[in-house]
Length: 99
Image 1 (cartoon, helix red, strand yellow):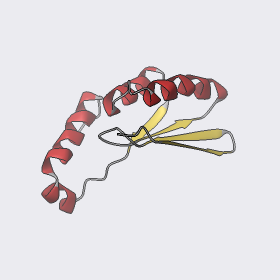
Image 2 (tube, rainbow, N blue to C red):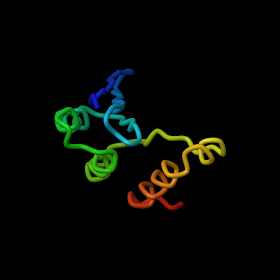
Image 3 (tube, rainbow, N blue to C red):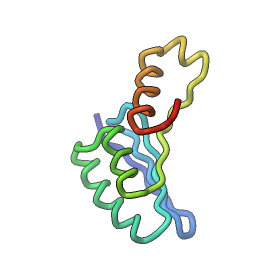
């Protein structure tokens, strides 16, 4: 799958939206120039196919960069895609979120 990624900027903050090739898209926010430099490294690895959703989130946690996995749990989604919802909850737990 294509490693699609979007970047946009709003004042001092830069936003990265990692979309393609991941189980769940990841939205990352760089608040400083230092975080932007760190994210340029992650972008290169993402484009080369090294990162998964989990590894990208873990990378953000290690480098103390704000991120969000994009997935909304709804009753309809749980009924139509129970495995994907279960995988999302497992991933959140593996990343240290309380469920």
